[in-house]
Structures are given as C-alpha cells and as structure tokens.
Length: 248
Image (cartoon, rainbow, N blue to C red; front, side):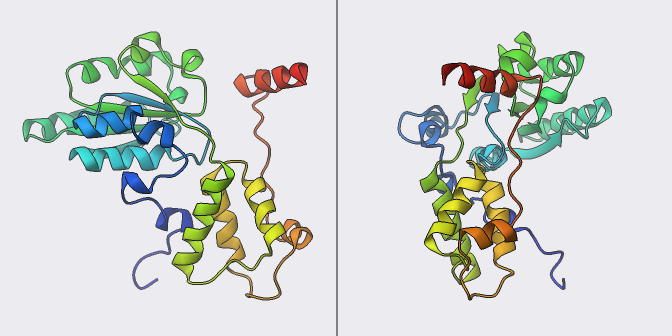
C-alpha cells in the first residue's frame, strides 16, 4: 500500500500498445478498419459493439494515445447531463489550445434518446471524437442520427487461443505458473466464455493458492466462482437464444 492501492491483475495487464491487443485481428491487422485508421492517422467517431471483456476500453485508450488526443472516459450508468456538459466544455478549452479530445462513453446505450442527441453538435463540429461502447445491438439502442455520424465496429469474444495468451501473460507477470493441471486450465478458459477480464480475475484468485498440489477440474470448480450465463430476458440475447434453440 506504500505505492498506492493494489491494482487488479486485469488492469496491470492492460495492453500498452495496439500491437498487444489480442482477439480482434479482424479490426486491427492488415486491411482491418482500425488498422487503416491508425495508418492514416485519422480517428473518426466510433461505436464499439461487443461482449464484456473483449477490449473495448483498452482499444479506445490506445487509439487516443496513438493520435495524441486527450482521453476522457464517462460511463452512461453513472453520468448525467451535467457530466456531459462538463466534458464538452473541457473539450472546447483543449481545442482552443490545440489538443483534441477522444470522449469514451461506456455503456452508451444507457443514455436516453435526448441525451444521445446532445452529442451531435459536438461530434459534428469536431469538439470531440466520440467512441461509444455497448454490449447491445446499436441498431436497436442508439439514435439513427448518432449512428449516421459514427462507424460501428463489432468486437468478437476472445477465442481459446487468445484466452491462453492472457493466461500466459499473467503467469509471466506473476513469475510463476497457475496451480492447475492441463485439463483444469482448459476448463478455466471455457468458464470465461470469451471474456478476457473474467479469465484474468479467475487467474488472480488462483494465484492466491499455494503452488502445489495442482488443482484438477473438479477442485477448480469448487475453488473459483463460475461465470453466470449472459441472459437479458427481454433484449437481443433472449432472441438469440430462442433462434439458437429453433435452429438446433
């Protein structure tokens, strides 16, 4: 605690460069849209649509750093009109001094229609570059006017190889392997269900255990908290599950 409060493992392993982002090669590599934007040094307003733990916040931070923009973060869950006005006024002042602002809004779908409309003049005149993150289908949850001014990019769940890369990075940072056998390691990745933050939280919990004996799958299930399946009852996930049931 002498050097400040301890940081979670997921935060300590947050990528420092775009090249370190995993699982989103379709956006960042080669002719991917983000790859082209970075190469052209032009970052437009964006909407990141993807599941939790897929890297939306990390990519937004790295884009701001790459473009030399001030990174401002808000959460639509905790922010209101007053917070937005404060962010817009601060962005205006920075612009007068020659610095742009990338405003990252997490869970942007939580803002109502009138609040979403409030972004429009500041996006249009270049006061801010808006990057919104959502786990919900933007076509259903965001205003058409806002969508017409931003490019929607879809982030994927992390696959098994990407999750294994995260576990390897965690072991390198901690300087020791996770106290689990091979089958339990595969089960750990499966439990995360493509969520990089969740798999690192599980790994952090396992690092508190002694290095031996190694946990097998049964002991792993007893030791760590299992992920609650994503089910939203009345939104897109509900209909995706119905569709999957019909197709099966």
